[in-house]
Length: 323
Ligand code: MEV
Image (cartoon, rainbow, N blue to C red):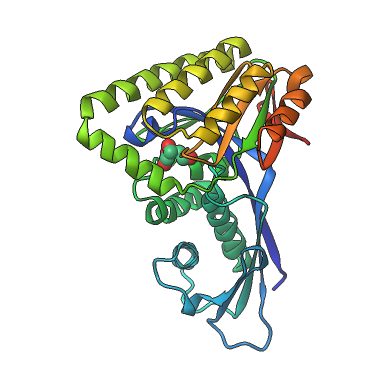
């Protein structure tokens, strides 16, 4: 059996994180500069059924049988095997290489799940369609995050800009004018699960307050979609700023995020906000192409541990890479 490699991109949430968990809409786009890559290959001379998992970057060299059943990797492997009806696979090696920072709001967990499910099922000769890959990755997200909306696994599986709502699934977005984003990492690791749990606690304590903020965010998302599709970056930037104020009111911003957001705006960004769970991780800034380099440098000077620039092209909606 030839080795099979599959990969999946990272993502950013453009507008609507957290409110999306409560059934409101959100916008997300893939980020192809960062990737999770999984290679499935035969492990020669090893008894059938043994699955070795190697991830040098995070110092994992183990076997499926040694991991807890509710470990995200076990869930992805077992789910994939069940989906293709294989109980005892040939001995195999799953090598995971990811350039996605963990717990940084870029969808690292979902990207590893999607790449692993694709590589394993294709290696066994039964590649799954995207809808099934997405559904399986969502079950892993549920274990990881408790109450995920499903936006991360969906934008990562389909690798295109989406408008997402939990009950209605996703609609692909068309982009009216090219957009440039600078993504800055605070370096503060913040698991999405904890941020989502903190928002839930506040919602339980003061439901009317949280729900008013979610409803405000939902309006921002609807206007943001129109601005994105209508090619109005200035409006989109203002909406990102308004969303950031709502997210700060939901207590998911942090001093480090605020510093990078303020730095980007001072350096001429059209809008800036945290992206993903918040309380650390990455922020995003919508910028004009002319200001991109200066804003990236300003973020680095302000303490960003990693800065990426990504461009969303106008119709057909595609994201391309820039350093
Ligand atoms: C995480 O990327 C986005 C959140 O809204 C969580 C979720 O939607 O599952 C914070």
